[in-house]
Length: 394
Ligand code: GDD
Image (tube, rainbow, N blue to C red; front, side, top):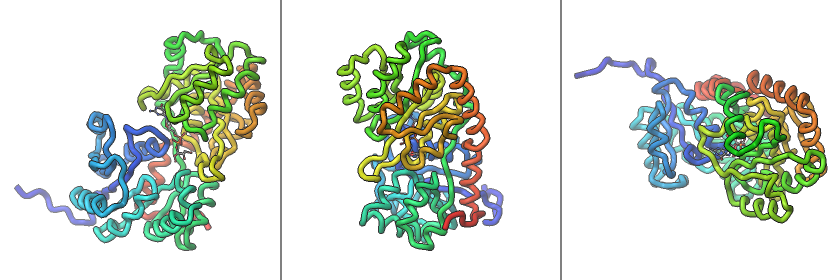
């Protein structure tokens, strides 16, 4: 049977999302790319990504196709280029969204030759590193020259990444900051149950932190600050959500400082189980700091948006674009991430004045619901893919 003849101009646009970063792996770029992919209208997106544990079960729940390459990390090799181009053609795509610009943006010329009419590449904190090192800097410049739009998550990242780009590449920089789903992350989304499960009374002053446990996220400084916090708020507890290479060091330091009864590690949690942990605390804190002479900054920090959406005041480290995630003094505090005294003082301010903490949290939720929703981010991203853009950077 012959189907209806569809003129090319009547065909739905279809975007191939090419990305290393996608669930089931955990992290900010993964959260960003998954949220954008979920927001495409039915039939308008296909994801090409790497293999990872539990992927088949995850993909089976999605409303769009996911092609899993056999590799666990995609690099722009000849073989991957061939397979990505084949998927682009097989699924009738006409646009490309790179989940991160580096390194897969190097596939842009092959996809252009295969018929991609628009190519948008996201950048994150990760590309700041690429922009600073001599060899990767040249590659990033090339990527900027090949794509149509190169997005950035904060003004700080725009400027850092812009230094590596040609004038033509800089003119393609557009803002696309991450967001949050305020229907998933909201006050009362399960924090009481988390507390009950951990044996914490509703009145126990609780600070929550959540991330991959790597040094730059600053959980070590929270632990160092804790004796000073406890001197003022003796029953204060710290809940650490997430896992990573720094966990053992953190646990060791907690033992050395005699804080076993004050600090609880719950490990990594599944995506769907994250919101209640943000809701469980009175305060969310992650004093991220820039490491390796500027190579490892915080690009923005989706966790701050998630905590704010749950109505929590946030404590943010002054690193990269992270201060954009908070209205300092209104919805939380920006602190020097190397200063345990300042970290402890700000935490004590919030823990000893719960009414003020709740008021700041409420303003934080108002702020993210107004300006930081994934829906808005998805709509902007689709405008970029449609080519409805004017330069917003110099
Ligand atoms: N499932 C699960 N389990 N998710 C977790 C866990 C966990 O144990 N811990 C943290 N997450 C989630 C958070 O809820 C959030 O959605 C995401 O992982 C972390 O995102 P970010 O706070 O943004 O940090 P990142 O370092 O992983 O992300 C990078 O890219 C982001 C997007 O551009 C950084 O450059 C960020 O600064 C940037 O915002």
